[in-house]
Length: 147
Image 1 (cartoon, one colour):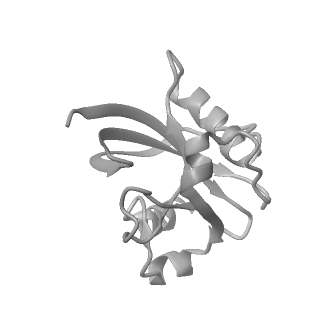
Image 2: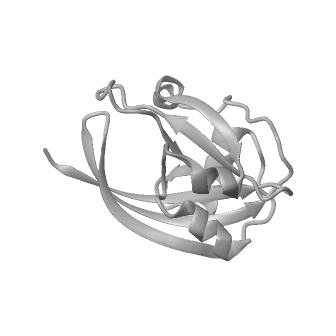
């Protein structure tokens, strides 16, 4: 199986109570695996910049319009499998302060509609204590440094 290279912009949406917004998703090809939690964001399209992708993905996935995008706060590169495809993924993360909101799924793709099963505004304490799978794995420590 060939590995697909992906460059992604991810957004850590953090509200006034320092809670971070995460989605929960499943891989339909691995029904026995528990859902995973992950931030908003996705792959760059065409000649899109990381910043433009971060703004677009946030609007598509949540309905929230980012008005101020700060500098990148971290990057990571890793390999993973999803829905039967192997990815070599590089992610750049941005931190965006936002009022709390209820997300809207009006911009979701069919794949997102089939695999995203929930969302939650996580406190740092919840992130530190959870036994659920959260990506990136060091999110609580990253947010500790940033907030």
